[in-house]
Image (cartoon, rainbow, N blue to C red):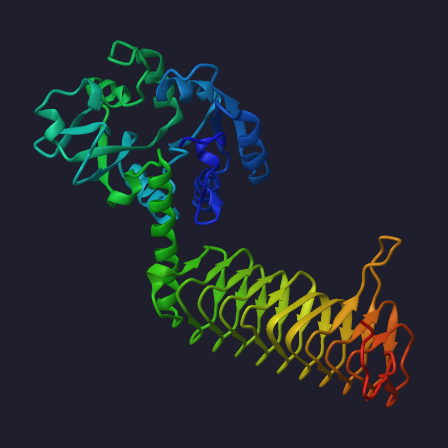
Length: 436
């Protein structure tokens, strides 16, 4: 990976790949999840333990069978499912298929296989008359065996008793001097234990071992998410150029343009429009919200028929009311922006409460950060008109229906329906000639 980050912590479509594997196992009904860790152990623990997994350290990386031993396989009971931590394209449905095949195998082993155009360094599945006979690692395979395109995905289901029966007999007499879990298949066959080779889609066999493969896996999941949403009536102008994470929910008839990145706990209603190159992180959009191009939204709420952007930044703890309009180059932080209110351009509002139908003129700033390093509230009532290039030095309150003259710096409360002008008086000196 050419990275200091442990491989399994690299994000695939917004989630560490190991998190994807653990969550799939949990969704499939796993009652206990054991994660074998090695390099970057402490970092991996910080990710998987909050998900309910228990970590076991493999002191030396001496192969897949040794990794299973490191997970204290001898203490396992019941059905055991073995998965790879770096195969992020597996789904819960794939796991269900493996388990269903295993439960029909009459106490044997189910091995998930896949057929690839370019098998590369993956272990080959050797069959005889359709029956699985052996798994041969690529480094130990003959030229003829390397022609086989069916490969081992590294996914196994079997009973714990059988696992512990065969594990002690796996040796390391191979090119890598490692303990291969694949040898378990040959040992089972020798002892007339049935082994089922269940073929799954090729994506299941894809392990991530480079930044290029990481990007490919993310593209696959983003596209899969888009396809699932399109099946529910969401419109994607170009689903291959749009990035929607698994956790996002979008209502039918909403339109997503290319370049949009939508992530986290975002929930979007119906008939919304997200224009190109917008970033939405854990936001709530009610029906018929329009986010114009280049806007950046995080941890905020947009009520029905509100419009934001282009090039607006909406920061956490902001709520934009129904039918409100936030225009280009406007930044809101921790603002309650009333229904029908407008801030059309070039404005910063932070720690503010803006009333319904109030108009905020261009260049307005709420000066919320004080010399004591605390932030204070600006409260502007409903139906207020704020002229351009105005500043509000918080804490300050403006009553309903007031008018703020352009260029004013407001440092005192303004009563309802009052006109406030706070600027130097203009002086014109006629026929003025500057001294040389």
